[in-house]
Image (cartoon, rainbow, N blue to C red; front, side, top):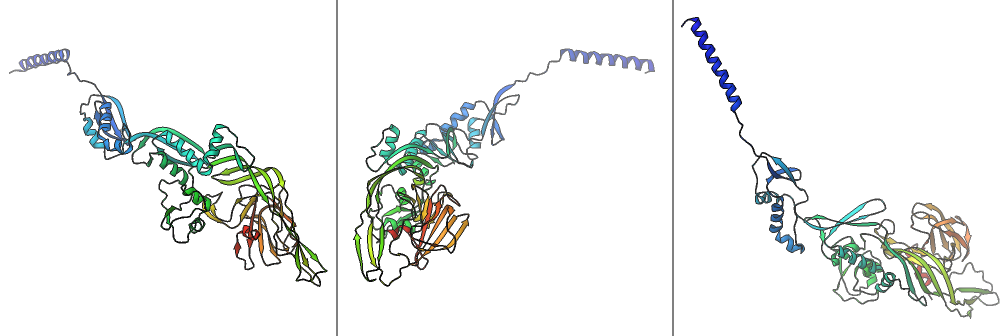
Length: 487
């Protein structure tokens, strides 16, 4: 083949190929692809797979979880809270069945049911959350908690607006409220969460911040409510709250009887404002008159003492049954007290002080807002022993020495605030705390009934009051009320 023949052949072949390529380009049709509308399933942000129907998956979950329905007594079970199902447009067709997806997720994350999230927010913006099934249970639990601190009758009168007669001891409630913010919202609750399913359990949780307060005690021989409470670091009132079937501190308990000795710790504090009317006994004072014409061994009652009676009205603010603040509104003396006058021989004798009878440290009337013994501390909320009594609700703020004596300590601490300690001629001593002013100092001699300070709220306290503590000759702590109960 010569060069001319080769060139013509090459040109013809090249032309043919070009025409073929042009023809194929003009006549080529690509294969068609279908776009699918599926649902992409995620759990905890991880892809599980594609499904055709979201409803089919949800219905399968509800159908399979019969045990959850039976346990919680609900009609429907929902997907886990971390499950997301998103509609997608895709060319992919590798679709999973609802059953396959269910088998993938059933052991990875708990399923949910419809319920309510209750949030309690305190003054420091700290939040406590818990879950309930029925909104109505919250109303019942709130009522049960309130009536742990108030009688049903008093609370019902508050709700209806009826005022109780003030002829004798009575209470007129002006407001009942949580002193924390309590909110509730509907939500889907994980079945692995603690869900409170009935009003009785929720009432217990509200009172103890625990569904099953486990601290129990079996009554032994010679036990009383007072001794059981003391052994278990409870006040008597707290013991009665924890055991609502026991109506009085004087109730006789059976040996072997099991009682609850868990401390009261409401999940949200119940505050009650009220006017309280009390019929108060005005205890007579004992006064000693020295007669220098009589021998020291001679003594007689010149005037017999008798108690009086007064009707007193207080404006009171209580939290969880404890008096936080009390103000005297009115006092109506029905029968005045008559002082006892005792004549004592003083011939050739010099008396220093009168150590037989004690003067009350405040003006009257008064209230003891917190007694001697175990209590829930009003500031930190823990069980602590109260080494004295708190006195409130007096006509003025004057504080008096309970006997003749000498000031042995005086100053200020973060806990006691302004305080005074006086040692008396009979060896006893007492401490007066939280004073706004100290009117005596170390080394000062004081007389029975002399004003030594002004009531206040210094140091660690929630409101104006006198914390009053008493000690015997050996420095052993006493219940202050006991030294006044000799007559």
